[in-house]
Image 1 (cartoon, rainbow, N blue to C red):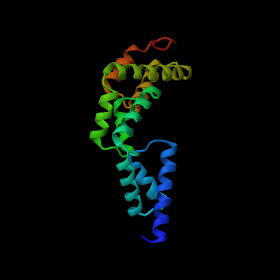
Image 2 (image 1 turned 90 degrees about the vertical axis):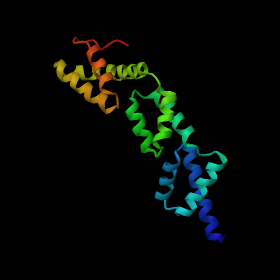
Image 3 (image 1 turned 90 degrees about the horizontal axis):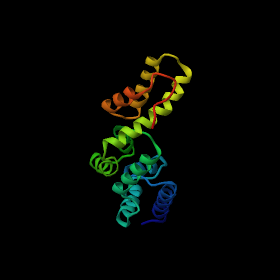
Image 4 (image 1 turned 180 degrees about the horizontal axis):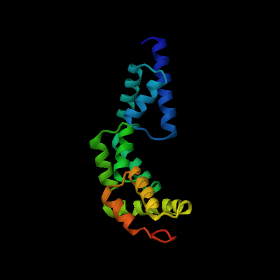
Amino acid sequence: MSKADLSADEACREGALRLLDLRAHAVSELKTKLRKRGHEIQCVDSVLADFLRVGLLDDQAFARAFCEERARTKNIGRRRMLADLRKRGVDPETAEDALADVWDTGDDEFARARAAATAKWRSVRRRTEDVRAAKQKVARFLASRGFPFDVLHQVLDELDTGEQPISS
């Protein structure tokens, strides 16, 4: 291996470590970022293979941690979580497994939808007197957050027609 090849590998490795220092990444996501930074595919593949071998990269662990973090901090639905994992390059089976571990009950999804709707309801009701229009805005908001139709309807049925937001 030439000195130029060695320095290219080292630069790629350093770039990957810097990215992993910021946060965990899925293998595909890290590969994409390294390629966008101009690293050769052979260097990227070599570095990623080394990282996988020593356990610095693990899509299953990444997906589970990502789901746990999002479950704590974001009021989003299962479909949105699956889309977010897929966008980061996690394969469908690994994403589904992580979701099954973290997102296993419909009650949790209903509670998240209710929390998201409560905040949005307050905001929308300050700007409009039309309850029907307000419910439509909340419905679009919940749908964009990946909540299923049945959960969306349950939450909308609970919306108070007065000025008070739904209770938690």
